[in-house]
Image 1 (cartoon, rainbow, N blue to C red):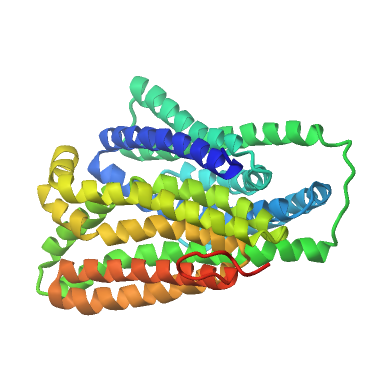
Image 2: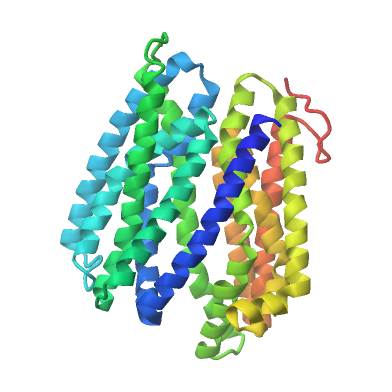
Length: 438
C-alpha cells in the first residue's frame, strides 16, 4: 500500500471514530445546556473558531508544504523561524484581543471566564500548528490522527465527568462546555510538543543548513496568507448565507417564521446528514498537501496525475453510494434521527451539492501542493458570488427549490474551476491522460 493510501486510511478511520465521539458530545451538550443554552454556545463558537484561524495562520499547511518539498537538512532552520514567527503573531493577536475587550462588548453578558479561555487558546493553537505542520510534512499521519482523536476523547471524558457529578447554572455550564474544548486543545498541545521533542532529539546529530530569513518568510507567508484569507472568507460567507437564504424565502412569499423553520430543516438536518462522510475528504486533504508538494519538488507530475486519478475514484467510490442512500432512504434517516420527514425532500435535492463538495476538498489540496493557493481563493470568491446571486434571484422567485438550485450550481462551479486549473497546470486533458509537464 502506498504512503498516500496508508496515511489516508489512518486518518479516515480515526476521523470516523472522532465523528462518532462528536455526535455523543453534541447529545450531551444538548441535554445539559438546553435549547437556549445550546443556542448561546453555538453563537460563541464562530467567534472562537475565527480566533483559532488567526492564531494558526494556517501554519500546518504552509509548513507541511515546505517540509515535504525541502531536504531534511533545511528543516531545523525553518522550525526555528516558525517558532519565532508564532511568538510574534501570538503577541500581536493577544494585544489586539485585549484592545477588543477594552473597546467592544465582545463576550460581555456571558461568563467572565470565557474571555480568559479565548486568550489561553491563542498561544496553544499557534505552537500546536507548528508541530502539526511538521508531522504532516514528514508524513507521520499517525500522530496527526492520534491528536485529532485525543481532542474529541478528552473533551467527551471531561464533559461526562463534570456534568455527571456536578450541576451548574446555565452561564457556568456554557463556560464549562467551552472550557472542556480548550482543555482538550491543551492536552493535544502537550502530546504533539512531546512527540516533536522526541522526534527532533533523534535528529540532532544530522547535518543541517539554513535558508535566508527572506526565503523562509516567503515560504511561510506565500501559503499562509492566502490560505488564511480563504478560511476567513469561508467563515464570512457561512455567516452571511443564513440571512441571505431567509431573506430570499421571505421575498418568495413565505412568512418570516416559516422561512426560519425551513432554513432550520435545510441547515440543521439536511446539511448535517449530507456532510457526514466529508471527514473522508478532509482526511485526503491533509495527506495530499505534503504528498503533492513532495512530487512537485521532484518534478514527478505523472505521480501527481496518478494520485489525482486515485482521489477521483475514491471520492466517487464513497460519494455516489452516499447520495444514493440519501435519495432512497432520506425519509427514514430524517424521520428516525431528527423526527422531521419533511427535511428529507431538501436532503434529496442537495445531492449534487454534497457530491461535488466531496471533490472540492481534495482538489483544493492539489492546488495548494501545486503552488496555486491564490487560484483556490479566487475560485472560492467567484463561485460564492455566483451561488449567492442565484440563491437570491431563484430563491426569491421559487422558494427553497430556487435556493437549493443556487447552492448546487455554486458547488458544481467551484469543483470545475479547481479541476480544470489542475489539469491545465499538469498539461493533461480533462480525461486525465498522461501528464505532459516534466
